[in-house]
Length: 400
Ligand SMILES: *[C@@H]1O[C@H](CO)[C@@H](O)[C@H](O)[C@H]1NC(C)=O
Image 1 (tube, rainbow, N blue to C red):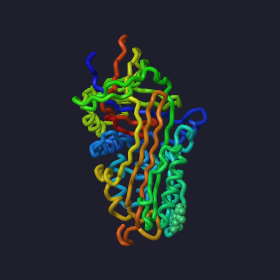
Image 2: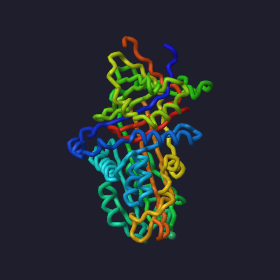
Image 3: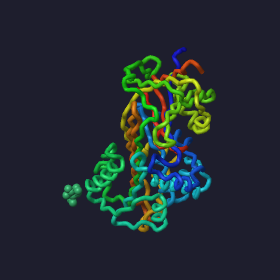
Image 4: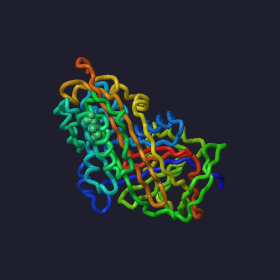
């Protein structure tokens, strides 16, 4: 067989409930989550991030960004709210709020050994949280603490300690004292952490340094893992990509790898999936009677994303420009800084991934508010997302 081209999307995904200590019944009782489409906005965000990144190995946690956007929008004025609804694909704000607060609640029931999603709100001791916003934070299962931001070092230390605890130390210093402004009014934070083993691990002995095609003319050696197994598979002719699914041990968790047919097809695949639902393709995957022979690199990296640069490119600008009156009582506030730090490690045993997202707010003015194994060789740039059900926990690209 000719060298098949191997861009791909990796998707890990979970059904409600996790592992032996989870409470699936409670999770399923939290309903409006079926109305929570996250694939298109996630791919829009990933596509912009990929286009902006000189490095092209990028990863983002869409759920972290969308959770904070939706929480903030609950306390913000019409235009900010409309932009968030537009990006996230909702016509009614109550539905958007049900979706993302429901997700935070659902994750709070899951086994924290494997999956953590947590929110935190810090309010300056000079301000009082708005009653309505305070109620919304409770729906998001968010901790709310008072903080004196004047000692920037101490504030950064407190935030970093929280992130480190929630992510088992993999994201231990997402902010520095220089990120904190003494006049800050409010800060919203989200962390997500996932650690799970493959249902069928790759054999470490089979991992070998092999060619990875950064582009048509650049070849590097990368540690390629190998697995021959009857995996879920789908050849998506419309999208010009093939997909494979790798289940994790935890009930319902799985990673799907989507491999563009063209060696340099990653930008086109990102483009297509920013307009056409990835889940429609994922749901067409079927168990393959014949084995799939999967080659994929093991990899590990950490990135820091300036969301101030990315969000306006997907239509979210007003949160940075216009004051919102529903967050604290004394003043309107707007986002002065939005950032995310993300980590991912994928190896023979499984995956560990984590993200810290922070939105920092400054006060604004008062006035303005077959029999042959199917070769699946991921040996050049690819795209991946990690999902829980249809919810995009992480999305990234690996290119070198
Ligand atoms: C600020 O906090 C740091 C770390 O907690 C502490 O060492 C320092 O003394 C504090 N500075 C002031 C001026 O209070």
